[in-house]
Image (cartoon, rainbow, N blue to C red):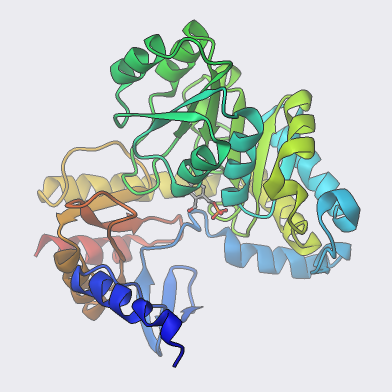
Length: 384
Ligand SMILES: Cc1ncc(COP(=O)(O)O)c(C=O)c1O
């Protein structure tokens, strides 16, 4: 035993004593897209971000038209030799999908957020960030060396107050998730656009959970709320409703040129596999051709939300595919999650530091593939 690492046992014991220890499990796809197998047991999966069931669909689509896109290792970072035709086609398809001048693909959404924030801000700037933003935004803010002010979640009055106090900086950046990943609530994008115009702030919106799901053509919540013109930097990921992996930034050509030259998570990291770039292209095609997937998802969202509200298991809330059941303590949320597993449902406990202390929750993620019968069974178990 290496005694320089003895402290790890003690540190893990502290984490375990607070009910916050994480353990890995091995998950496999069940027979249906909404089924999950862990240790030979099958659960109804209410924890996946594959909101449109595209992950399985992409395997079929790739097999139906094999191409250069099947290649895995890209061999180098994009500015060396890693960027191939698939990456170029993906970026063109992303720009077309989002209706922007240009797009840039990153290996993950995490890398896209960090790359974008650190490219547009530095130590002479200020970032105003929603208190519930995703960890990748928080880490981007930290790495940027800018002054960071966190405004209360979705509190636009607080944001205005902070904007008023933020003169004297070179640039201002307001940054928010559009659909918040743990609370499943929606940013007030219309107000953020107005505030960013009034205070000359750059507005960056992370549409990770909204891409493919919201808006007439699935571009995200800015499209749904009619305020795309006011968003300067839009970030997305292909790892959720688009069913594969890889992040992206869309915006003006000069923004993308800046990222190519400045975003360290782009420049110093191997380009995503060609096969992933191709999966992204195929997923965008499916989003375009099969709007019925998002229509079905929203029928499921409404069905489940209405019933849980009716039964008193959930307070009134917006219709979104992320439905949080607030429990409070990490121990209780773990116990509830285990009890749901015994009833055949996989709904993970979300604990600090992912959510604030005292706000542990069970996070239900809905998919277009869930059946009414699966939803009814869940309502009945949760109402008990
Ligand atoms: C809001 C938000 N942004 C960014 C990310 C990161 O995306 P990716 O999983 O592609 O790294 C996530 C993923 O959990 C997220 O929830």
